[in-house]
Length: 464
Image (cartoon, rainbow, N blue to C red; front, side):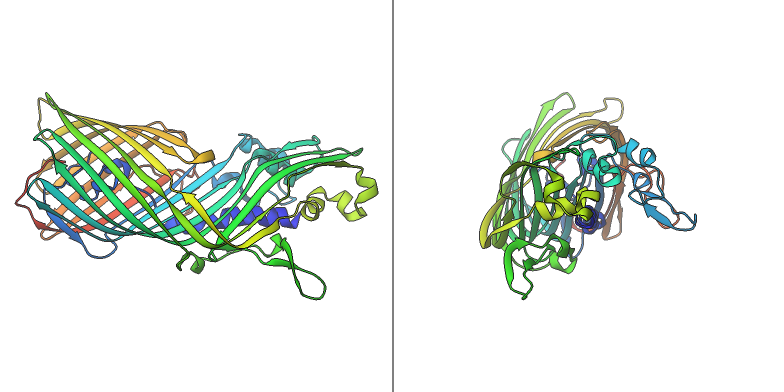
């Protein structure tokens, strides 16, 4: 049981580094004057040259159907909080909100360290250095029920796609937006990647029947670690010699482990923008087409097992009373390679947008953005409608809303130019319930953007 609890704890902790920053800002797609629009579509140029010398943009984002209210409960004394696995928490109260077959939690990071954009003729160039990271976890309902009540309600469990992943990398990019005609613009960005940390654990299949008469288990799982963000030691024998099995009891998360150099890769973005006439502008982009090759990657997997046995003849008394503890010793990750080179594809994003300029007020537009992320079991989509305006030369505003895989979200943003600085502030989604300690109690689907840039030459006027 302790090993299984540790895996769940690692899944939660793995998410925390990414809760401090996030991915591209979708609410800024139609925001006039938003200087980092090239991150969402490289065909978007700016109406000024600019430089963002240090930490120019940070976005905090979390995507999930889950809420911390599902996991934290008042303890027996009423003065402390305990998790839903604590014996004092009623099983139905804990399990009822989690009855989705999958319970994903996704966090991403795109922390801008340096950006420079400038126009030369029909081309707008941009150079960018960013620190990016991602974390994801998926815990199926059957695992929560198994850990909470064991076999009290049923004997069959399907824990397919238990998943934890953490990865971080540095990105150096160069791109161009090129005006083919006055109405058609194309853009592209090429990005060199330096992998810093990569760790994942995925139960591709884990089916169990744990009846009093027999146990039948089918398992096929693997685990990879490059760097020290999420790692575990090899198991050892009584003499202290390393075995070929991974010791899941030694699983640890290290925030410092997200830094380092453990891989190299390449990716690209491409986009197009077309002025269709009569106030309508259409655009589309594909982002992050590429991969990272990780070096010195420890790879372990559970041998594909499918066996059935009589627990009364195989297990000790303690294991028979604690099925989770028994499984921790039955299902082992066997180390296959301590120095493997592996390929990790980037998560591709597709954006499609349409913007219409209001005939009664040319400083106001309506926009519609569709987005799809291609990310294995974490694929997700969003459709977002917005109203955008630039009522003053120094102020641009947008408000937006729309459905997604993770529910309805509401957003707003502003770009403000004051003297020689330009500030960005906004959100794609927000948490309506927050404790005095700034812990979000509502659905974990929110973000916040903070940005700063220095406009260099407002002479060029190329509408985004």
